[in-house]
Length: 312
Image 1 (cartoon, rainbow, N blue to C red):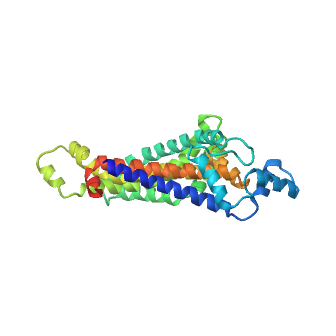
Image 2 (tube, helix red, strand yellow):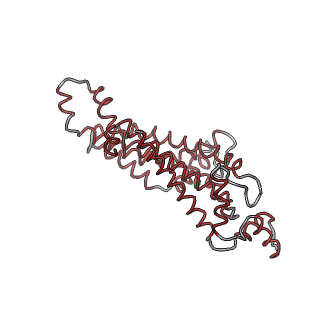
Image 3 (cartoon, one colour):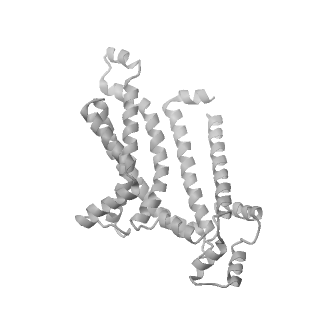
């Protein structure tokens, strides 16, 4: 087990290192003059070349790629994201403030998605191929086909404009989070419904189940001890990855609903070519992805120890 855990951690570190290098390289070689964009964002006025050159020197854009990369990577190993190229403030406090809006929103969307998908999938799997099953699959397919930005606009039009029940923009009260969370959650529910349904049907089709039923084992025990663990593996996969994907979806949803968070933080950083802030958001998203995958791999081995035996 320790060997397996070491391999998983090593793979996680390789992914994070590659993400850090590619992120820095892409931003460094992006078209345009980042010093001019930073100067415009900092002073909000047309500037002389002397001021732009001074900004270029201050933020370290007057050096070559490798010295700049190593000077950024060194503090990063100590979890120091550096200072904003525009404001000069440390990146981490502003990033943390954005995370306090985005992470609860993503978690609420995930809970809504699971709350909708689980009963819908169980309802569909009870009678596969029947009308109830086809209706559930059609609802899930429709939810997967609707883009988040369009669904968000539809919810704003219905619940904020037409009915006036919920606020559309901002994040001043808990009610402001309902429509964004619904937008995220309904999209998650579509994929979770299909995966949970497929997992239940596949588990029910196992060859050993008729023998267990003939022994007189109660259906509740069969579902708890045999069907649920088998169906849990694909569900855990999608559930963990959806949490990571929700952070990306929240970026777009926050912009639509005018909420503070990683979305507005990233958009403003890209517009200002604020490299430290952009790199911090990308690395944070990558960290959530790799940690989610690490947890999923460990849960696999707890649910089905044969997976660890095959790896060994």
